[in-house]
Structures are given as C-alpha cells and as structure tokens.
Image (cartoon, rainbow, N blue to C red; front, top):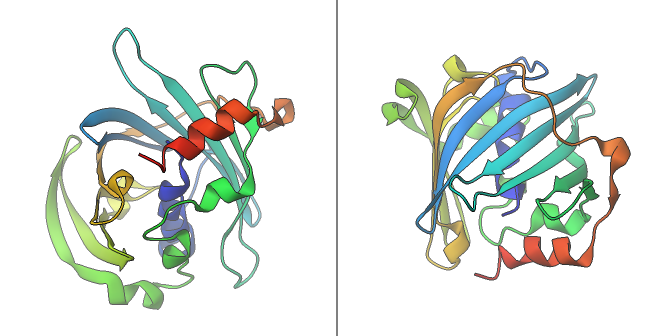
Length: 220
C-alpha cells in the first residue's frame, strides 16, 4: 500500500492548525482495509525551516507479518502549497531504501492531496461538520469532524489538538468506484522518540519489482 493517501494529514496539521512538530513524535493507528487490519505508525523524522520529513510504517502481525516503511520530505515556502519533494520506500525484499517515482505520490483516483492543501483555517471551514465525541482504541476523545468528497469517494476525518503533532483521531474513507478507497484509521496511541528506519543517503533507484508492487495497490 502506498502512503500518498495519508500525506494530507500533515498538510492539514502543518498548514492550518500550526501544530508543533518534534523529531521522533507521532501516532500509532489501527488501519482496516478490505478486511485486513494493519498497524500504521506515522512520525516526524526531521524538522527544519520550511521543511519536514515524515516516515510511515505499515506492519502486520503473525508468522507471515510484513513491515514496509515510506519516508517523505515535504516543503512549505511562504504562502505556496505544501509540496512533496522526495519519497523513499523500504520493503521486506530490499536491503536498501529505494527512491520513489514522483507519480506514485498522486495515484489516488478519488479525493486528491490537492483537496487538503489548506494554508489557513478559513480554507477548511467549509468541510467542518461539528464537534463530536469519538471512541477509538486510544480512548474517548472530543474531536472536530470534517468531510471531503471527490469522484465518488467520501473522507470523514476527526482532528484534535490533544493528540498532536498529527492531530488525527479517526478517518473513514468510503468509495462507490474504487475498492481500495474503502478503509478506516483509528488512533491507538501516541509515539515518542521513534528512530527513522530509512536513511535517504543510502537510497538506491527504485526497482521494477517494487514499482509494480506499489502500483498493484491501486488495481485491486
């Protein structure tokens, strides 16, 4: 599975809510997609002026469990929209991280990352549904409910500053057109002092096998 569908979480937090990002901090989620549960960790690996890097870890349990990591470098200059500048992936079959091809950042055929490029709070007010109490594995939280839709996909997400820096409490995506766009994410815990798994300085060009694996997530 590719992480492009989750990058907007940082666009919202970074551009609108002005959460303070600290290296090693993030959130652990339970993601349910097509009947399968996956542990999804999202955490900050580097912070600099007008730039931030985040890493995502997808893991499944059991004897045949799988771990995959994706890291993204994102930039924000002045009032310009946040840009994904570089991406890397580390799969169980590779001994080194691989440089992701740019088109893999934008495969989602429903709600697009551009739908979440908010630079100020006024831009997101039209998506506000209301303040609600949400039950997730992390507990009961009061969060702000937002909804975005495009091309048959509806994304409901709940944000709270209690669970900074990411702020996400819950997300539910439903689609009448694309099976892979039906999934949910629920907060299970907050993370601190997480060390990155990917070292961009050791990255190699993306192999054909890895590219085909990432593309296959969008053909099911």
